[in-house]
Image (cartoon, rainbow, N blue to C red; front, side, top):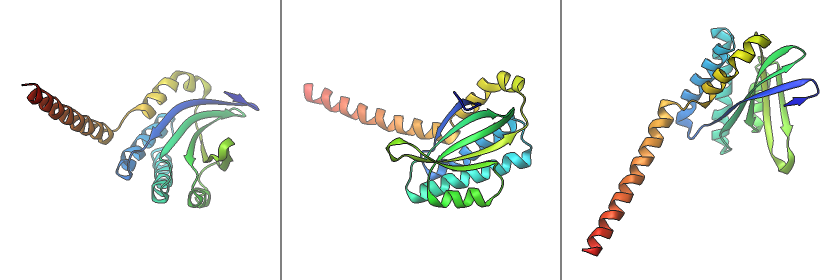
Length: 172
């Protein structure tokens, strides 16, 4: 999507089901930052700040989905995170003086997001080659999420098995 000389490539969104999954989310953000060639220190800092913002979302009872994109403006690439808006997030992210852009976005129907962006040392040729790889990193489910889904599915199957056993018993 191109807006006023900006090009955005959506990498995906991450739903964080419970506060217990924030650690796995942070590790995924770290891997993403390393994949776009941020140093280990910078990647750790981005992951920690975005994870802290998501913890504040949970504490306030707000939504828990982060949208991630790669944008380019004026021949510079940025890794962008759109986080559900909670007033305390702006304070945490803005005071860090770490992100290159921290902005509150008002959308139609009263939806508000906090946009944070970090410049990355990426060239356009690297971006073209890596876009799918970056999307895979964002799309990966953590071990904790997979185990949680498996546990839920097992409970559903057990309930279904019990329902079937009752029906069989009623028919015989």
